[in-house]
Image (cartoon, rainbow, N blue to C red; front, side):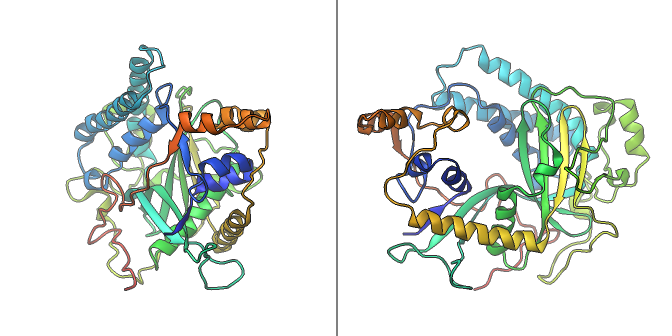
Length: 402
Protein backbone atom coordinates (compact mmCIF):
# COMPACT_ATOMS: atom_id res chain seq x y z
CA UNK A 1 0.00 0.00 0.00
CA UNK A 2 1.27 3.45 -0.90
CA UNK A 3 2.26 6.04 1.70
CA UNK A 4 0.20 9.20 1.21
CA UNK A 5 1.37 12.80 1.69
CA UNK A 6 -1.07 15.72 1.54
CA UNK A 7 -0.58 19.46 1.69
CA UNK A 8 -2.16 19.70 5.19
CA UNK A 9 0.35 17.04 6.30
CA UNK A 10 3.24 19.14 4.99
CA UNK A 11 1.94 22.25 6.73
CA UNK A 12 1.45 20.38 10.02
CA UNK A 13 4.96 18.89 9.74
CA UNK A 14 6.45 22.36 9.46
CA UNK A 15 4.21 23.81 12.15
CA UNK A 16 4.13 21.14 14.89
CA UNK A 17 5.51 17.59 14.68
CA UNK A 18 3.10 16.38 17.37
CA UNK A 19 0.05 17.47 15.36
CA UNK A 20 1.56 15.98 12.23
CA UNK A 21 2.22 12.67 13.97
CA UNK A 22 -1.42 12.39 15.06
CA UNK A 23 -3.12 13.47 11.84
CA UNK A 24 -0.81 12.49 8.96
CA UNK A 25 -1.84 9.64 6.66
CA UNK A 26 1.57 8.01 6.97
CA UNK A 27 1.51 8.19 10.78
CA UNK A 28 -1.46 7.72 13.17
CA UNK A 29 -4.08 9.12 10.77
CA UNK A 30 -6.59 10.31 13.40
CA UNK A 31 -9.45 12.80 13.35
CA UNK A 32 -11.75 14.14 16.11
CA UNK A 33 -14.93 12.17 16.72
CA UNK A 34 -17.04 15.28 17.33
CA UNK A 35 -18.33 17.23 14.36
CA UNK A 36 -18.13 20.95 13.72
CA UNK A 37 -19.46 23.15 16.49
CA UNK A 38 -20.75 25.90 14.19
CA UNK A 39 -21.79 26.28 10.56
CA UNK A 40 -18.79 26.06 8.25
CA UNK A 41 -19.70 28.91 5.93
CA UNK A 42 -16.53 28.68 3.79
CA UNK A 43 -17.24 25.01 3.03
CA UNK A 44 -20.84 25.81 2.08
CA UNK A 45 -19.72 28.67 -0.17
CA UNK A 46 -17.20 26.35 -1.82
CA UNK A 47 -19.99 23.85 -2.55
CA UNK A 48 -22.08 26.64 -4.07
CA UNK A 49 -19.21 27.81 -6.30
CA UNK A 50 -18.74 24.23 -7.51
CA UNK A 51 -22.30 24.43 -8.85
CA UNK A 52 -21.80 27.95 -10.22
CA UNK A 53 -18.76 26.86 -12.26
CA UNK A 54 -20.05 23.42 -13.22
CA UNK A 55 -18.75 23.10 -16.82
CA UNK A 56 -21.90 21.39 -18.06
CA UNK A 57 -24.01 24.42 -17.10
CA UNK A 58 -21.57 27.16 -18.09
CA UNK A 59 -23.65 28.23 -21.09
CA UNK A 60 -26.97 28.12 -19.22
CA UNK A 61 -29.04 31.17 -18.42
CA UNK A 62 -27.99 32.51 -15.03
CA UNK A 63 -31.65 32.79 -14.03
CA UNK A 64 -31.70 28.98 -14.10
CA UNK A 65 -28.36 28.25 -12.48
CA UNK A 66 -28.43 30.76 -9.57
CA UNK A 67 -31.26 28.88 -7.77
CA UNK A 68 -29.21 25.69 -8.19
CA UNK A 69 -26.21 27.47 -6.68
CA UNK A 70 -28.27 28.40 -3.61
CA UNK A 71 -29.48 24.80 -3.36
CA UNK A 72 -25.89 23.57 -3.38
CA UNK A 73 -25.11 25.97 -0.53
CA UNK A 74 -28.16 24.83 1.46
CA UNK A 75 -27.34 21.14 0.93
CA UNK A 76 -23.86 21.61 2.39
CA UNK A 77 -25.23 23.45 5.44
CA UNK A 78 -27.80 20.68 5.96
CA UNK A 79 -25.07 18.05 5.68
CA UNK A 80 -22.99 19.84 8.30
CA UNK A 81 -25.92 20.03 10.68
CA UNK A 82 -26.73 16.35 10.29
CA UNK A 83 -23.06 15.40 10.73
CA UNK A 84 -22.99 16.55 14.33
CA UNK A 85 -22.77 20.34 14.69
CA UNK A 86 -25.31 20.20 17.48
CA UNK A 87 -23.55 22.48 19.96
CA UNK A 88 -24.07 25.65 17.98
CA UNK A 89 -27.11 27.82 18.78
CA UNK A 90 -30.16 26.99 16.64
CA UNK A 91 -30.26 30.58 15.36
CA UNK A 92 -26.77 30.18 13.89
CA UNK A 93 -28.05 28.07 10.99
CA UNK A 94 -30.66 30.45 9.54
CA UNK A 95 -28.22 33.30 10.09
CA UNK A 96 -25.53 31.46 8.15
CA UNK A 97 -28.01 30.63 5.38
CA UNK A 98 -29.11 34.25 5.07
CA UNK A 99 -25.52 35.53 5.04
CA UNK A 100 -24.53 32.97 2.42
CA UNK A 101 -27.47 33.71 0.13
CA UNK A 102 -26.75 37.43 0.32
CA UNK A 103 -23.07 36.92 -0.48
CA UNK A 104 -23.84 34.57 -3.37
CA UNK A 105 -26.34 37.06 -4.80
CA UNK A 106 -23.70 39.78 -4.83
CA UNK A 107 -21.14 37.37 -6.26
CA UNK A 108 -23.49 36.55 -9.15
CA UNK A 109 -23.53 40.23 -10.00
CA UNK A 110 -19.76 40.66 -9.75
CA UNK A 111 -18.21 37.47 -11.12
CA UNK A 112 -19.38 37.68 -14.76
CA UNK A 113 -17.43 40.92 -15.11
CA UNK A 114 -14.13 39.24 -14.21
CA UNK A 115 -14.62 35.63 -15.30
CA UNK A 116 -12.25 35.79 -18.26
CA UNK A 117 -11.92 32.03 -18.44
CA UNK A 118 -13.90 28.92 -19.22
CA UNK A 119 -14.17 26.19 -16.52
CA UNK A 120 -12.90 22.74 -17.50
CA UNK A 121 -12.86 20.72 -14.25
CA UNK A 122 -14.09 21.36 -10.72
CA UNK A 123 -13.15 19.67 -7.42
CA UNK A 124 -10.83 17.27 -9.23
CA UNK A 125 -8.45 14.93 -7.38
CA UNK A 126 -4.85 14.22 -8.28
CA UNK A 127 -2.54 11.44 -7.08
CA UNK A 128 1.11 11.45 -8.18
CA UNK A 129 4.34 9.86 -7.00
CA UNK A 130 6.81 12.04 -5.13
CA UNK A 131 10.21 12.33 -6.81
CA UNK A 132 13.21 11.00 -4.91
CA UNK A 133 15.43 14.02 -4.08
CA UNK A 134 18.58 11.86 -4.20
CA UNK A 135 17.85 9.93 -7.40
CA UNK A 136 16.90 11.99 -10.41
CA UNK A 137 14.01 10.48 -12.34
CA UNK A 138 13.11 7.95 -9.63
CA UNK A 139 10.13 7.90 -7.34
CA UNK A 140 10.49 8.15 -3.58
CA UNK A 141 9.77 4.94 -1.65
CA UNK A 142 8.98 4.18 1.96
CA UNK A 143 10.93 2.01 4.42
CA UNK A 144 9.34 -1.18 3.04
CA UNK A 145 9.62 -0.17 -0.59
CA UNK A 146 6.11 1.33 -0.81
CA UNK A 147 5.62 4.16 -3.30
CA UNK A 148 5.06 7.58 -1.74
CA UNK A 149 2.17 9.49 -3.29
CA UNK A 150 1.27 13.19 -3.11
CA UNK A 151 -2.51 13.48 -3.07
CA UNK A 152 -4.84 16.46 -3.16
CA UNK A 153 -7.67 18.24 -4.90
CA UNK A 154 -7.92 21.37 -7.00
CA UNK A 155 -10.93 23.67 -6.77
CA UNK A 156 -11.09 24.27 -10.50
CA UNK A 157 -9.13 23.98 -13.73
CA UNK A 158 -9.90 26.74 -16.22
CA UNK A 159 -8.63 27.88 -19.60
CA UNK A 160 -8.29 31.52 -20.66
CA UNK A 161 -8.62 33.35 -23.96
CA UNK A 162 -4.95 32.65 -24.73
CA UNK A 163 -5.48 28.85 -24.50
CA UNK A 164 -3.55 28.74 -21.21
CA UNK A 165 -4.63 26.51 -18.32
CA UNK A 166 -4.98 27.94 -14.82
CA UNK A 167 -5.73 26.44 -11.42
CA UNK A 168 -8.43 28.34 -9.53
CA UNK A 169 -8.49 28.46 -5.73
CA UNK A 170 -11.54 29.73 -3.85
CA UNK A 171 -10.68 31.50 -0.59
CA UNK A 172 -12.92 33.00 2.09
CA UNK A 173 -11.27 35.86 3.96
CA UNK A 174 -12.19 37.33 7.34
CA UNK A 175 -11.01 40.84 8.04
CA UNK A 176 -8.97 42.93 5.61
CA UNK A 177 -7.40 41.68 2.42
CA UNK A 178 -3.94 40.15 2.87
CA UNK A 179 -1.23 41.75 0.72
CA UNK A 180 -1.56 40.59 -2.86
CA UNK A 181 2.15 39.92 -3.13
CA UNK A 182 1.89 37.17 -0.53
CA UNK A 183 -0.10 35.10 -3.01
CA UNK A 184 2.74 34.95 -5.55
CA UNK A 185 4.86 32.36 -3.82
CA UNK A 186 2.32 30.32 -1.86
CA UNK A 187 3.55 26.77 -1.55
CA UNK A 188 0.18 24.95 -1.99
CA UNK A 189 -0.47 26.62 -5.34
CA UNK A 190 2.99 25.84 -6.70
CA UNK A 191 2.91 22.24 -5.44
CA UNK A 192 -0.55 21.69 -6.94
CA UNK A 193 0.60 23.15 -10.26
CA UNK A 194 3.53 20.72 -10.33
CA UNK A 195 1.32 17.78 -9.34
CA UNK A 196 -1.34 18.55 -11.91
CA UNK A 197 1.24 18.66 -14.69
CA UNK A 198 2.44 15.22 -13.57
CA UNK A 199 -1.11 13.92 -13.35
CA UNK A 200 -1.93 15.00 -16.92
CA UNK A 201 1.31 14.80 -18.95
CA UNK A 202 1.45 17.41 -21.67
CA UNK A 203 -0.72 19.94 -19.84
CA UNK A 204 1.10 23.11 -18.74
CA UNK A 205 -0.24 25.26 -15.89
CA UNK A 206 0.23 28.98 -16.51
CA UNK A 207 -0.54 30.02 -12.95
CA UNK A 208 -3.10 30.23 -10.17
CA UNK A 209 -6.23 32.37 -9.99
CA UNK A 210 -7.24 33.28 -6.44
CA UNK A 211 -10.97 33.85 -6.21
CA UNK A 212 -11.51 35.51 -2.82
CA UNK A 213 -14.56 36.75 -0.95
CA UNK A 214 -14.81 38.57 2.37
CA UNK A 215 -17.49 37.61 4.86
CA UNK A 216 -17.39 41.10 6.40
CA UNK A 217 -16.82 43.11 3.23
CA UNK A 218 -19.00 45.89 1.88
CA UNK A 219 -19.28 46.50 -1.83
CA UNK A 220 -17.91 49.82 -3.03
CA UNK A 221 -18.45 51.87 -6.14
CA UNK A 222 -14.89 51.20 -7.28
CA UNK A 223 -14.96 48.12 -9.49
CA UNK A 224 -11.28 47.75 -10.27
CA UNK A 225 -8.56 48.57 -7.78
CA UNK A 226 -5.07 47.08 -7.90
CA UNK A 227 -4.13 45.40 -4.63
CA UNK A 228 -0.71 45.75 -3.02
CA UNK A 229 1.82 43.41 -4.51
CA UNK A 230 4.76 43.67 -2.15
CA UNK A 231 6.97 45.42 -4.70
CA UNK A 232 6.02 43.08 -7.53
CA UNK A 233 4.45 44.13 -10.77
CA UNK A 234 0.70 44.52 -10.18
CA UNK A 235 -1.54 45.88 -12.93
CA UNK A 236 -5.21 46.47 -13.35
CA UNK A 237 -6.92 43.82 -15.36
CA UNK A 238 -8.13 45.26 -18.63
CA UNK A 239 -11.91 45.30 -18.94
CA UNK A 240 -11.85 44.26 -22.59
CA UNK A 241 -12.62 40.65 -21.70
CA UNK A 242 -15.91 41.34 -19.88
CA UNK A 243 -18.65 38.91 -20.92
CA UNK A 244 -22.38 39.47 -21.22
CA UNK A 245 -24.26 39.42 -17.94
CA UNK A 246 -27.71 40.17 -16.59
CA UNK A 247 -28.23 43.92 -16.41
CA UNK A 248 -30.66 43.62 -13.54
CA UNK A 249 -27.92 42.23 -11.30
CA UNK A 250 -25.57 45.21 -11.71
CA UNK A 251 -25.49 48.86 -10.84
CA UNK A 252 -25.67 51.36 -13.70
CA UNK A 253 -21.93 52.32 -13.61
CA UNK A 254 -20.95 48.67 -13.81
CA UNK A 255 -23.44 48.05 -16.62
CA UNK A 256 -21.90 50.87 -18.65
CA UNK A 257 -18.40 49.45 -18.14
CA UNK A 258 -19.53 46.02 -19.24
CA UNK A 259 -21.40 47.21 -22.31
CA UNK A 260 -18.41 49.28 -23.43
CA UNK A 261 -16.09 46.28 -23.34
CA UNK A 262 -15.24 43.74 -26.00
CA UNK A 263 -15.83 40.17 -24.76
CA UNK A 264 -13.07 37.73 -25.69
CA UNK A 265 -14.34 34.78 -23.64
CA UNK A 266 -18.10 34.48 -24.05
CA UNK A 267 -20.26 32.93 -21.37
CA UNK A 268 -23.86 31.93 -20.76
CA UNK A 269 -24.91 31.85 -24.42
CA UNK A 270 -26.94 29.14 -26.16
CA UNK A 271 -24.27 28.94 -28.88
CA UNK A 272 -21.81 27.22 -26.55
CA UNK A 273 -20.82 29.72 -23.88
CA UNK A 274 -17.22 29.54 -22.78
CA UNK A 275 -16.54 26.79 -25.30
CA UNK A 276 -17.06 29.16 -28.24
CA UNK A 277 -13.38 30.16 -28.28
CA UNK A 278 -10.75 28.14 -30.23
CA UNK A 279 -10.77 24.44 -29.35
CA UNK A 280 -8.04 22.13 -28.08
CA UNK A 281 -8.17 18.89 -30.02
CA UNK A 282 -4.47 17.95 -30.03
CA UNK A 283 -1.96 17.23 -27.32
CA UNK A 284 0.57 19.59 -28.88
CA UNK A 285 -1.81 22.59 -28.93
CA UNK A 286 0.16 25.34 -27.20
CA UNK A 287 -0.96 28.44 -25.33
CA UNK A 288 -0.56 31.80 -27.05
CA UNK A 289 1.12 34.13 -24.60
CA UNK A 290 -0.33 37.66 -24.40
CA UNK A 291 1.83 40.53 -25.64
CA UNK A 292 2.20 41.82 -22.07
CA UNK A 293 2.11 39.21 -19.30
CA UNK A 294 2.35 40.56 -15.76
CA UNK A 295 3.29 38.32 -12.88
CA UNK A 296 0.31 39.53 -10.84
CA UNK A 297 -2.98 41.00 -12.07
CA UNK A 298 -5.69 41.90 -9.63
CA UNK A 299 -9.21 43.30 -9.50
CA UNK A 300 -10.79 44.21 -6.17
CA UNK A 301 -14.05 45.45 -4.70
CA UNK A 302 -15.03 45.71 -1.06
CA UNK A 303 -16.26 42.12 -0.90
CA UNK A 304 -14.52 40.25 -3.73
CA UNK A 305 -11.02 40.03 -5.13
CA UNK A 306 -9.67 38.16 -8.14
CA UNK A 307 -5.89 37.74 -8.40
CA UNK A 308 -4.08 36.12 -11.33
CA UNK A 309 -0.59 34.89 -10.34
CA UNK A 310 1.57 33.61 -13.20
CA UNK A 311 4.04 30.84 -12.30
CA UNK A 312 7.44 30.54 -13.91
CA UNK A 313 8.75 27.14 -14.92
CA UNK A 314 11.56 27.56 -12.41
CA UNK A 315 9.15 28.19 -9.51
CA UNK A 316 7.14 25.05 -10.31
CA UNK A 317 10.34 22.96 -10.58
CA UNK A 318 11.52 24.35 -7.23
CA UNK A 319 8.19 23.34 -5.66
CA UNK A 320 8.89 19.77 -6.78
CA UNK A 321 12.26 19.80 -4.96
CA UNK A 322 10.72 21.25 -1.77
CA UNK A 323 7.97 18.61 -1.79
CA UNK A 324 10.57 15.88 -2.19
CA UNK A 325 12.70 17.29 0.64
CA UNK A 326 9.71 17.64 3.00
CA UNK A 327 8.52 14.11 2.26
CA UNK A 328 12.00 12.63 2.77
CA UNK A 329 12.17 14.43 6.14
CA UNK A 330 8.78 12.98 7.11
CA UNK A 331 9.95 9.47 6.30
CA UNK A 332 13.09 9.99 8.39
CA UNK A 333 11.23 11.52 11.38
CA UNK A 334 11.56 9.51 14.63
CA UNK A 335 8.59 7.72 16.18
CA UNK A 336 8.44 10.22 19.06
CA UNK A 337 7.29 13.56 17.68
CA UNK A 338 7.79 16.59 20.00
CA UNK A 339 5.22 19.42 20.04
CA UNK A 340 5.91 23.00 19.10
CA UNK A 341 3.69 24.89 21.55
CA UNK A 342 2.65 28.45 20.82
CA UNK A 343 -0.55 30.42 21.01
CA UNK A 344 -0.86 30.48 17.21
CA UNK A 345 -0.24 26.73 16.88
CA UNK A 346 -2.22 25.41 19.83
CA UNK A 347 -5.48 27.38 19.73
CA UNK A 348 -6.77 25.96 16.43
CA UNK A 349 -5.21 22.50 16.89
CA UNK A 350 -7.79 19.66 17.09
CA UNK A 351 -5.34 17.60 19.18
CA UNK A 352 -4.81 20.15 21.95
CA UNK A 353 -6.31 18.04 24.77
CA UNK A 354 -4.14 14.91 24.34
CA UNK A 355 -1.10 17.08 23.67
CA UNK A 356 -1.60 18.98 26.94
CA UNK A 357 -1.98 15.67 28.77
CA UNK A 358 1.31 14.42 27.36
CA UNK A 359 3.11 17.63 28.27
CA UNK A 360 1.74 17.34 31.82
CA UNK A 361 3.18 13.83 32.12
CA UNK A 362 -0.16 12.01 31.84
CA UNK A 363 -1.07 9.18 29.49
CA UNK A 364 -3.03 10.44 26.49
CA UNK A 365 -4.28 6.99 25.43
CA UNK A 366 -7.73 7.36 27.03
CA UNK A 367 -8.28 10.77 25.41
CA UNK A 368 -7.21 9.47 22.00
CA UNK A 369 -9.48 6.41 22.24
CA UNK A 370 -12.54 8.37 23.36
CA UNK A 371 -12.20 11.56 21.36
CA UNK A 372 -10.56 10.47 18.11
CA UNK A 373 -10.95 7.81 15.42
CA UNK A 374 -9.07 6.64 12.33
CA UNK A 375 -9.87 8.74 9.31
CA UNK A 376 -11.81 6.98 6.57
CA UNK A 377 -9.78 6.14 3.46
CA UNK A 378 -9.76 8.58 0.58
CA UNK A 379 -11.89 7.58 -2.37
CA UNK A 380 -10.30 9.16 -5.41
CA UNK A 381 -12.59 10.11 -8.25
CA UNK A 382 -12.01 12.31 -11.26
CA UNK A 383 -13.79 15.16 -9.58
CA UNK A 384 -17.23 15.70 -8.18
CA UNK A 385 -20.16 17.39 -9.88
CA UNK A 386 -18.60 17.53 -13.31
CA UNK A 387 -15.02 17.06 -12.23
CA UNK A 388 -14.56 14.43 -14.92
CA UNK A 389 -16.42 16.37 -17.59
CA UNK A 390 -13.59 16.67 -20.10
CA UNK A 391 -15.09 17.84 -23.37
CA UNK A 392 -14.26 16.63 -26.82
CA UNK A 393 -13.48 20.19 -27.86
CA UNK A 394 -12.55 23.16 -25.70
CA UNK A 395 -10.31 22.09 -22.84
CA UNK A 396 -10.20 18.43 -23.83
CA UNK A 397 -7.93 16.31 -21.64
CA UNK A 398 -4.48 15.44 -22.94
CA UNK A 399 -4.02 11.74 -23.55
CA UNK A 400 -2.51 9.74 -20.72
CA UNK A 401 0.42 7.47 -21.48
CA UNK A 402 -0.46 3.77 -21.64
